[in-house]
Length: 277
Image 1: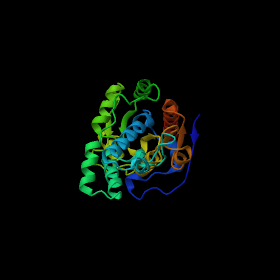
Image 2 (image 1 turned 30 degrees about the vertical axis):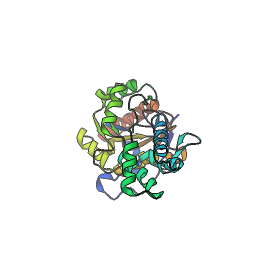
Image 3 (image 1 turned 90 degrees about the vertical axis):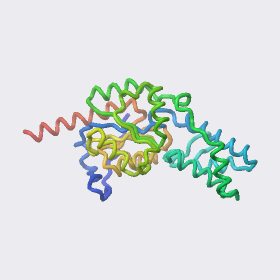
Image 4 (image 1 turned 180 degrees about the horizontal axis):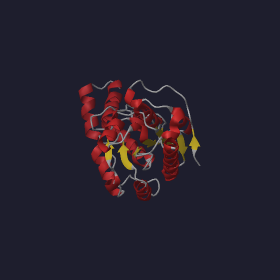
């Protein structure tokens, strides 16, 4: 089932990002940009276990009752063992999560330099292979998109090497044309620069680019970058209500994406035929 959500809101003032929501049918998909965690792989499996282990390690090292405060700062509901919609874990690069953890200790009265040492000692990265559970037949999905003549990119707040390791493990890396990652030095989501950089790398136009993600931040990214379509995937880190605020289409899983791409590609062909008559 597909849910279309057409809105008429003013877009960003940047000329590169201008788009007209009343003309979504003119989108001719040439590039699909996927978020990674929560869209392609299980978000909670990777990040839920990670934040729990980090919090326990910091609490054991310091002897301070900071576990729940770290959960709160990261946007993790430890009772439900779920990521909070719009929480830091949804949309924050690893470097910024590190700073959040340091800040929690400083707020507990620990000197900043000592807090830095503790977090550096406790900090680790989630295993990009063992915690990467694909949300469906991703290889089949990517092959279908490629057969449609559409390029594929990944835009994530995760670090580049971890992203590469995950894509290799899932046997998707050879089908990905470009990536923008959290440690690339670009402004973080939902700033538009990551999408613009990807578009420049692969020779695509933002208005023919499809942003696919599971968070409200991903939908804002698509809007800010002037993407032709922002597709929200249900069941990830954000709630239906949050996704619906800025999504053009909602789908229950990425398995339904080819239908969306086909519909808009066919409409673009019909528009071209009508324009030449």
